[in-house]
Length: 167
Figure (cartoon, rainbow, N blue to C red):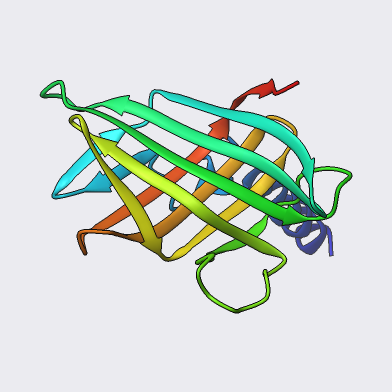
């Protein structure tokens, strides 16, 4: 009986130690490489900021910008003007591209103005969903988006954003 009790205690302690292993593996950011992928290049995001424009016609407006420079000194900037339903604060969600020329009703989460500046050339986003999660100053933003030239840009960023309030 003593032997079973000792074995049980040993097993319990082993399980306890295993369950207390480090939580610093960034598993909350799984799938986020903090990069912009475009035209075969994967560029690290070095700056992320939001301009808070506040409430506008029943929606709350945040403009997200991600910037960086590739290893061969090519600069980029990804920009997206996002609108979430409500006027109290910005709400994270899945934002779909909305064409103002359409007769469709505005969705609860949308964007119509988004672009990629890559090596001095600007291309508008014309399709795709932008997924935002988080709050405060920490957000994750991702999407696979189609540009006006038919090329695809993939955004993956999770981290701190500096926030400027437009007054």
